[in-house]
Image 1 (tube, helix red, strand yellow):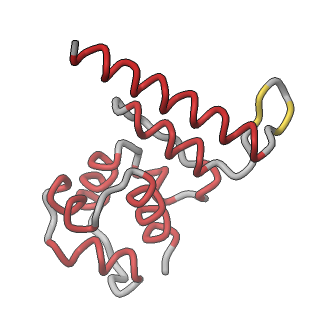
Image 2 (image 1 turned 180 degrees about the vertical axis):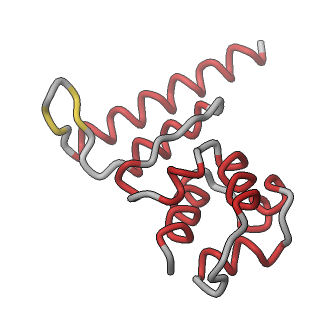
Length: 122
């Protein structure tokens, strides 16, 4: 698997998108995402990479770089929970948070989102 394919898959999974849904959003062929992620596709047009990056909310440079340096843009608050879960060693106040602290943070965000949704139903 290429770095680009690896990055696309990691971000796609992080955003809870199927390969089909990503292909649809990026307006590329159905097999394209699968072929890129598996490494079967050895070449990639720049405009295809740009479409996939835009559909994932990242830059083409993010897809070509090390997965440790990928930056995310999202309007969906639920993505924040997935992003926090994705980060291997999150830092708060210059200290790495523990697994338990990470769970607390993710639960607090999920609870806040649930509360907002509940209040909107009233």
